[in-house]
Image 1 (cartoon, rainbow, N blue to C red):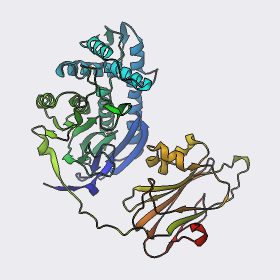
Image 2 (cartoon, rainbow, N blue to C red):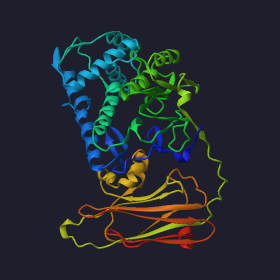
Image 3 (cartoon, rainbow, N blue to C red):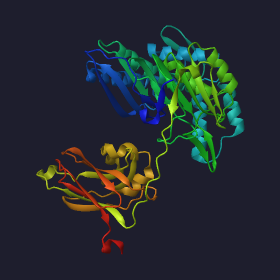
Amino acid sequence: MNQFTRRDALWAGIVGVAASRAEASPLSREFSFHYDHILGTSLDAWVNAPDAMIVERIVLDEIERLRTVFSLYDPASELSQLNRTAGSFVASPDLLTVLREYAVWLQRTNGACNPRVGELVRLWKDAERSGAEPDRVDLDELAREIVGPCWRLDASRVHRFTDHALDLNAVAKGYILQQASAAVRKLPGVTGVLLNLGGDLCGWGDAPSFIGIQDPHQPQENAPPLTAVRLKDAAIATSGGYQRYYTFGERRYSHLIDPRTGRPADGIASATVVAPTSVIANVLATTLCVLAPDEGLRLIAATPEADCLIVTASGKQLRSAGFAIREVAIKQEPAKPKAEAWPAEHQVTVALELPKMMGGSRYRRPYVAVWVENADGKPVRSISVWGNQIRWVPELSGWWKFAKSDRELVNAVCKATRAPGKYEVVWDGKDDKGNAVPQGTYTIKVEVHREHGKHVTQTGKIVCGAEAAKVTLEKNAETEDTIVEYAKKKKDEKK
């Protein structure tokens, strides 16, 4: 079996991708793209096609088209309109298709996959805001109310039997991913596609095929994968409650609710499913987190070409019969020798200059971010960020890509913008948590974004060891040369 190392993986959300593909068409070229804030998550794509822009537009347009059908946050979406309508509702083919899928899975899972679970989710969210856990009697009553069918479908209409709001996410997310992939597949010259929507993937053709699966008990970004599988003309989805919770004081509950009981499903840490379609993979991954492990394995066995890995809350791993055949061996990287400690009394000084610009009333002070990355490209320290209004700080997209998940960090480092002039900032050899880093080679990045100006980044590596070092970051449209110097602190700086 091929060896698969952590270094081979391109991490994106809960799974990683490593390239392994057939020879591409001479008319196609390989490219990838990334977008944040797509359906409340991120989108990554790898495509082999003649025209990058056409594929990118087709994917984004199809996702946006279906967002207007299934969004619960857009009051104008078709689903939101259905939830406000009593009786009969004229529905699109997309909405009818997803509702038909739910009717099938509602029966196959004995109610564990139920579109009316949204009512229970709302109850738990309201309770969390109030600080008191939901009343058990209310949960039992609502769980009884949502049992059974709640609509009848004909060729173009939904006839509702209840006023309970529907949440179609367990099927709709997979359906959107599947439809976006299918739309690209129709384009001439496309030989392979892999779409990753918030960690759920759908791939076909000569797309990358090695997928790393995250360990729910070690969810850190740089943690090694639990295992890896080979994906070929199929979809993979992972669900779990290990990163999202309802919190009441010291007690935390999984965000996944069992619609049969109204209670959080806490027995399963994560479930990963490989299946022929994204719809099946997403439905099963969500449902397996609700069912007891033996029930989930029986459901997988009864679903053609589906396999799963279930990780229980205690850490036990349960595999379906065919999952091991799909697995790829992971070769752990050898432990690196312990690095020498950062020398006492040393620091890195970053001297940058914002030039005077000709712009008159159109000149706006730039937003600036200065940060440090280690040899693996991981952010270590946000030295300083200049930006008056927090709502525009995300325009520093390079820095914001990793900082957005740490609001405490953002609030700590963001300061006012600066006028043109010379400035110095220093790094004391500690990370954002105040821990000393070892000696080594570090990358200094200076990102500048100015309204009516340019968005540019200076990058340079500097060796922080026993000897002093100095590097110059070349000037650009928004900054003069930036001087980065590693040396002992001056005496007046140590006072």
